[in-house]
Image (cartoon, rainbow, N blue to C red):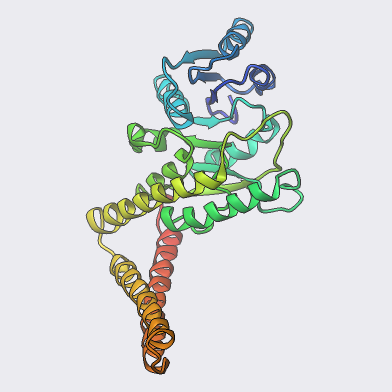
Amino acid sequence: MYRERRIAVVVPAYNEELLIGPTLETMPEFVDRVYVVDDCSSDETSARIGERAAQDPRIVSIRHKTNSGVGAAIVTGYAAALAEDPDIVAVMAGDNQMDPAFLPKLLDPIVDEKADYAVGNRLINPEFRKDMSRWRFVGNAALTLLTKIASGYWQLVDPQNGYTAISRRALETIPLDAVYPRYGYCNDILVRLNVYGFRVQNVPHPARYGLERSKIKYSSYILRLSGLLLKDFLWRMKTKYVVMGFHPLVFYYFFGAIFTVLGLLVGVYALHFKFVQGYPIFVPAVIAILIFGLGAQFLLFAMLFDMQAEKNGGWY
């Protein structure tokens, strides 16, 4: 128990034979249950989990028959945890990257009823991210901006951080079977939490890297995740601001996108008008700037309305 709350931890693992043991050995004593989900590892991960489970009765070992992705592994752990009715469920990766000493800081906002979902934040402090590579930081920063727009959590930083804690009622509300099964699950969950009105809080903590090596290739990952975030954004607009409750910001986003793209197209035509056809560029250039500016203004107003909805909405 932690502050009179039953705590469960989900540990997804894939080919972590070297690090899964140290991860489980350092699990805090106040944790009531640990669901370790082996996503069909091809090394000795399963054996290492079994060895720890024999020594620690809190550990529940679960193994996927096929490799389904880290998101699917976490959803499997969430479902197993819900069956035993914990108050809060945290996620700690099996690569020993997440310092268990910071787990109470993730639990406190939920125990104090300030949020239903707490997310670690490694980017807020240069000292915290000193061990993070520059390429990894740039990739995380880009994905943070895209996730802010898609999820509606405009104050959130470091949404790629897998060190999280979630309340039971949030887990019971969001459709777990619809969560994206691979890397990108954390962004997808945020979109769904926003639609259902749950508050999210960042918890600063330092990055910790050792033998762990990121399995994410950011060059392809950002492109793939951008498509997911666009799909999630459109789903959020439709579900939250049309189906569940109407808000005119959907029209601001729609016309903003139309006019912005149209302004860019007119700008390209203005360049063709000048340098290919040899005519003066002034009139088409002014038209392009006006149309693009109108589109940008619509988009900024839409974002402002979305920020206000984040500030005023929520369960608490």
